[in-house]
Amino acid sequence: MDLPQQGYRATKPRARAPPPTADSVLFDDTSSAAPAMNSQGYYTPGYNMAGPQNDMQGGAGPNNMFADPMANAAMMYGSSLANTGKDMVNKEISKFMSVNKLKYFFAVDTRYVLKKLMILMFPYTHQDWEVRYHRDTPLPPRQDVNAPDLYIPTMAFITYILLAGMALGIQKRFSPEVLGLCASTALVWVIIEVLVMLLSLYLLTVHSDLSTFDLIAYSGYKYVGMIFTVLCGLLFGSDGYYVALAWCSCALMFFLVRSLKMKIIPSTDSMGTGSSAKPQFRLYITVVIAVFQPIIIYWLTSHLVR
Image 1 (cartoon, one colour):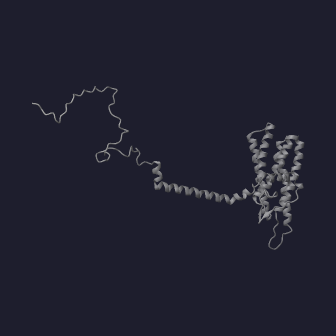
Image 2 (image 1 turned 180 degrees about the vertical axis):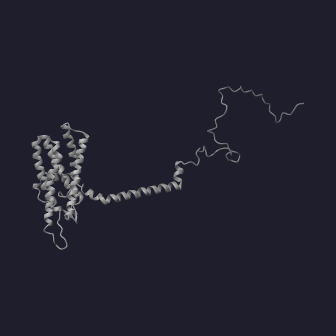
């Protein structure tokens, strides 16, 4: 019986595929393929849209730490404590040392330094020793050559230590211990000298415009003469040393007497008594301070020249 051919198509027998070999891929790489979608346009439920999750989910990561309100509160509390401690330290330091006042003593320029060095070495030609003021405030050193400064004493002290090391090296007596002893001795002498001057002014009840920084400045000017004395001793021997020592000592004494005379002001009591004795105290203090300088210069420089 012949079947109707309508609706049917003759098919050829399919050839069998060869068996898989070892080099063939068992699974297709679908990592880069798009996720399957159903007929309604949604992704299949089994596909993870969030990607790989962190193994330490809920751990203390950087974002979680800053997002934690307790961590933020702790950081703010720590910063407030640090600022409070800084303010307390600055307040305690300002009780003993004013930073603005210290800046005043370093307000110098090249012109002032050259003029001041000439006055220290040749004070006999200087005529005007008055310290200038502007609205009851002394002018800075760069505007008044008679104003004391701390730049020259500081640089002179450092130069003296370096020169002492060179002198000891020339004499083959250099060692770090000897140089350290030389520096500490020079520094201790300045401290002792300033304390003695402050104590003398206090015990004699002499009112003065001198501050502690002023006394340190006037006490440190001796290092300029000490440098000149040691250099002359190294270049010209003992004879040059003693000539330079005599010149620098006389120049420094003249400079200190004229400078301190303008600073130390005699005070009178309410009854007006003691006004005749106070100028004598002022004269005694200035003379003693001036006469004491050559002794210190000789003590700190004699062992460097042989």
